[in-house]
Length: 303
Ligand code: E4P
Image 1: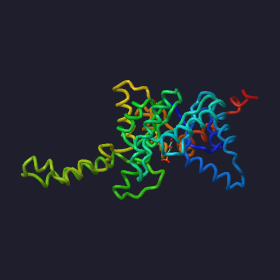
Image 2: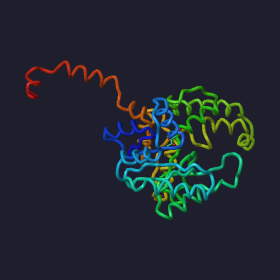
Image 3: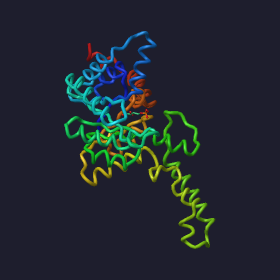
């Protein structure tokens, strides 16, 4: 499994790269804003072109750096993709263009398919595309059909969506307990089914409350962000699709482990979560005792 760092903060990218674990980086306009705001707070100015060149250089030759377009229509997205690719790919031959699967923003439905058009046009020109804002397996299937090099399903945002629909309060970093959700959902389902005993099967099948219970804590049958990645991996495998899955929108270390178990090709991880992955209280305890147990005869070897 490859690890990408999900940030536009150069100091975080430099630090994580120095640990030898970074295979690429992903940015988006919100991550760029966070980087700019952090520098502003330190009274530092940013010269965007030089800054992005430094990101590409730091991540290194051939290790993909995703840069996202900002427009919502075909023509403009294509123009921006070409600008980003030609300005920055020469630095380390590692630029990937991020295109949203669907640029519909609640106003103009004609832009529903512009993302797909751009993905296929860029892919035909051999400009690698990372399809972003994927929230369903159906969208991931279309991204692969359009020729995307990478598909980025937003696992954390699906967990957020499911919990929000259930009015569950949570912090951004909280673990999404899909096993618990499943158990609660099953309980509700069986309680409801028992209520209907004696009724004809067709009325049970059409019962709206039962339908709700059988889809409890699910987004059209998808029970969590991890579930979404599993489903996409399975579909791509079924048809030998070459698009690589980047599990994105990662919230905590346990979620990274679950993503690795799904066989996701890549997980893009925020810097704080990469840091969280290294810790365990028993490791701290172990280090303390190893240091305390060093005998003089052994330490003499190093003198
Ligand atoms: C990366 O490609 C995505 O843009 C990023 O993981 C989104 O993460 P978020 O849901 O925490 O904003």
